[in-house]
Amino acid sequence: MRPRVCFALWAVWSMRADACIHHLQSRNPSPPSMTRRSRPGARTKTAIRNVRVFNGISIEPPRTVIMDGEFIDIDPRGVETTIDAQGRILIPGLIDSHVHVNDVDGLETMTSFGVTTAMVMLRGHGGLCDVQLAGLPAVGPDTQHAKMFNMSSGQLLYPTADPDAAVSYAFGNKSDFYKITAEKNGPSQEMQTALVKSTHERGKLAMTHAANALSWKQAVLSGTDGIQHTATDAPIDADVLTQAGAAGQFSTPTMNMARYTFSNPILLGQMGRTPNSPDSYAQVKANVKAIRAAGIPILAGTDAVGTLLPGVTIPFGLTLHYELQNLVEATGMEPAEALAAATLVAARHHRLHDRGVIAPGMRADLVLLNSDPLANISNTLDIARVWVGGVEYAPVANGKEAAAASPNPSGTVG
Image (cartoon, rainbow, N blue to C red):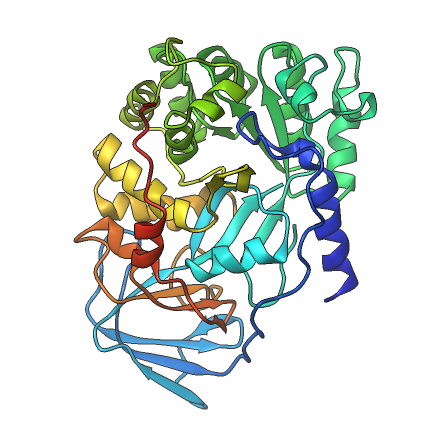
């Protein structure tokens, strides 16, 4: 493995405090796996013939898609490999807009499920899911995040801190975007607004963790670009939603993490909640419906962490497919809109202009499906082949079998 990648993996593992309120991993995790299970394939100029392409809205009639190296091409000359797709469906590689993966094993699992880009708190590794990094987040002292992850004073953002210095440190250490943690005793409204301003002055994106109604309001008022999670405790104020829509802010509600949490008394307890608290998965669903109705773009993200607690696993890869199902079932999205939330819409709002659609000059991040996801969104699990930057990943996951072995929880404790 290249030394730079090794260092990036180690850095992410050592900065586990970057995780969200839901991320209850052990404070003494075992060292991350650095060994690939599979040997990366070679890039060849490949023509996929008789394939029906998802264009972000609908599925087009059969045509030929050509991969030349890392990108999609239109020149048929020099094709070395030809694949007859026999009318199967080709979609852009899926984008998980909020996930926490800290080792190569996790990247391989995600890739096997067709996830080719992940917004996480690590850099790419040839032929595996490409990742975008957030560095040390803005976490206030005496907060749940600070306590849960035993953060040192040097890792915390105090009320007297210089927001520009905090942002400069993050981007000076190769962060791709800046993360702010809004929570009880977290950064003040003034601090959040200043952090976002400093981030924007550098031409970068700000993302804000907001898992309750007050934090959601703070995130909107700060001018942050993306709001991660949604309120579990109360409806989001209608005026707040209107302002977020007018400002062009987007939402990554991570419904499936909430669904896992509200299906498990242990997780509820770890979050300081009880079955009698106002927090619920029903409130999550209602808020996401309201977010969509307000015209706020919704991105598909999972908050997946792998093994969370003994006997509790939030699986990488599989949960993104569950998130798409949640968006359809809980918000009334059509399957095409949900699929766009993990492809075109996610790429656009994360400013990843080289992916998210299948077109000449774009990255050859591709997933070949055996069945039509617009007929049933669960068909995204019916995966035939996966390519990341023109490199085929094999073996792919048996999505239907994985779902049967690890079904989506109910979202209701009991």
